[in-house]
Structures are given as C-alpha cells and as structure tokens.
Length: 473
Image (cartoon, rainbow, N blue to C red; front, side, top):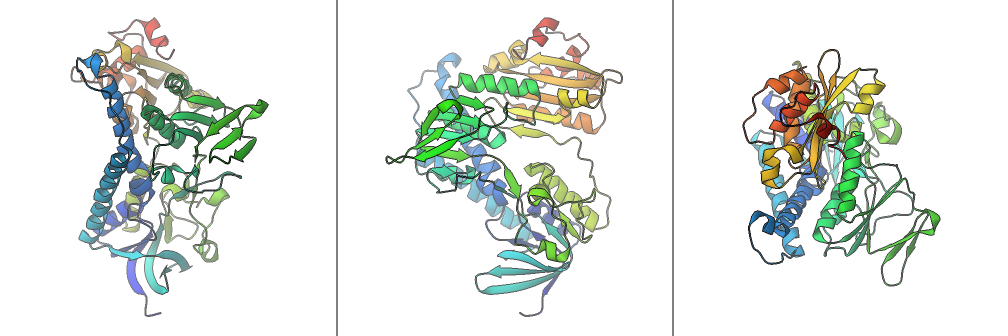
C-alpha cells in the first residue's frame, strides 16, 4: 500500500453521530475524514428515523382524511397507492443523504468508501473490493451504530421474515403481519400498518409495551392500540413457527394458540456493530453484546480512540448520537464539552405519539425521592378539542420538597414537539412552578404543560383534580 493519508481525526460511520461529529470537527479546524461502508447518513437517514417518519406522516394524513366529515369536509374514500408511498419515502431519503454529502465535502471532510479495520491505535485500513487504503490519524472515532438482532428461528429472507429495513422496501402492503417486539420500532410499525388496513398482530415477551416509558404511558398506548384492532400478545414467547405451502407463516403461542400471517417483522432489539473491526487487537474494550465502553469524555480504553452513538449502547437515539458526536469533537479539539446527558428527550411515533424526558414515576420512587405528580388530559384543553386530537395527557413528576422538575411524559398529538420545553427545564434545573408561571400563547398545545405543572399543586385552572387523576383511564 502507498503511504497512509494523514488526518487529525478519522471517523468510522456516517450516521447522525458520525457525520455530525465530522462537521463539528471540521468547524473546529481539525483535518477530518469519514469512512462509510454503506450509504451516507447511516441507518437513521436511510432505513430508520427519516423514511419511517415519511411513512407515518402518510398514515396520519390517511387517518385525518377518513375523519374529514368530523371537520366539515366531504371527500371520497381514500386509497393507499403503495408504489407512490415507496417513491415519496425514497425521494425524501435521497434529498437528505445528498445533503449530508454536500455538508461534508463543503467543510473539507474527505469521504472514504469501504470497510474499516483498525490496525493500530492510529491507523485504519479501508477495503473496497480489491482496493485498500490506509489512513493515519491522531484520533479515531467509532460511530458504527447498531444492527437488528434476529432471534433463533427467524433468519431474514427479505420477503416474509424481515426487519424494519426490509419493511421499507416491501413490494406490496402486507395483508397480515406479525410484529415481534413491543419496543419503539415494533409499536411504530404496528400502528403504521394498522392505519393502512393491514391485519396486525404484535407479540412481546415482556408483560408491557415500550418498557422504558412511564407505566401510565405504556398502559395508555396498549389501550389505544387495541382500539386500532391490533391484536396484542404480551408476556408471550413464540413456541413454534411453521412455513406453509401457500407462503403463509403459522406462529404457535403458549396454550396452542396459532396466528397465521403473510409477513413477520422482527423488532426484537438492536445490537452494536463492533465485530470484525480489529478492536480487541488494538486494546479497545468491548463489553456484553458488542457494546464499546466509554468514559464521560467518550474515550474508549484506548484514550485516543473515541466511540459515540448506538455502538456505545448508552441510549440508542439518533439525536443523542449527534450530541455525543459534537461533544467528542470538542474534547478532541481541546475544548470543554457538554457531557451531562440527564435531559435527553425521547420520542416514539406511534398512534398516538409518545415523548419523555427525565425520570419515570417508578424510577423517581426507586431513587427514594418524595414526589408530586401533575397531569392534564388533552380532552380538557381547548386547542386539542378544536384540533380533534383529544386522546392523551401530560404527566409531570416533581420533587415534593424542592419542586424541581424530575421527569415529563406525554402521550398524544404532537408529543414529540411538546417535550422540548420540559427537556430544557430539566437541563436548567427549573421547577414545576417555573413551567406554571411561564406565559404560553393561547390557544396552543403547550398550555397543557403549564396546566399539568399547576395540577401538581392542585391549582390547575381548567381542571378539577379528580379529572386529572382520571386522565390516564
């Protein structure tokens, strides 16, 4: 091989962690390169956050059209055109991945295509076909993301046994689909296909959906998904799978219960991409299930090698990967960096949406905190009533002694947009009374945050206390 190309920073992976880190590093004056074996933008832009949300927007619009009569509009029966839905999704992806390339090259970041393997703490060999390129760097950053884990007996076949990635390329809408896994990905796809008219069965081995969310939020989502005629089997393991001559699949559940489907979407979790990269040989510590261990400065056990995003398995969130990427670039450039991650919001684009930040009620009580809780149901709010979006509520958790906001949990329309005021409040150590006293424009959905904060002290203006307690029932 020729002499290695020299950089101050080489980043492996260009998902929302890697490409953001590269841009930030270039802004800070570091000569930077990225290595990507697939598509720029990683899972998020190509097969995750962006294309799935393009589909979910379609599902929400379809649902609104079906309800048009409630809003005083007469329309014909809407029909899904599957090829058009696929093309719109692909167009959105192409626009954004092309934008990533423009942003990187515009900042002077070199892009190397191929598989990366570390040969020392300062060198990476990139293999693309028969060609090999050696890169040398003062610092390396691993941003390789995670892959969909397949349970035993469910190998991919791209048509009948699929992950979320293959679901986005299905040639036609499945008539009957089983979703394995009741986490974020599983619940989002279950809600999407149900709105489009597919017969959906969701099977989860744990006793509840979305296990990282507050209990009341999970209970409400379960109730709403049942209203959408999604068959839920919780606390259940599949005992047998049979492939039938007609192409269908029969899943056997405990007690002999069988479910016949045409497609099985496996959404049983994701695991870090950290194998076959030479990490162990250069001394990078890899923990259980491929997780790369980092300190609070995002350094691995080899101090000039950093890791960010899903490969660290701290929080598998695209925006968290971006925040880590910027922080790591700041550290490498010798600047102070924000690495306090206690106010990271999460959003789940189910029907209805879920968003949260901070501690759940269960976590706060387990930590020994005396707490007070404020709730406000959307059915009591004027803007939600006008919008026809009355499902859901806001739940705020505060410290009973200090009034400090500890956690916020929202289920309902625009939850993913509403959560950020609470995220900022937690990051800034604000109190429930600060939210209550902030003047919110009327009529807006954010008024529900102030009302919930007031309810924590029993003084919500537009709510009797017993209504708040009934908000989640």
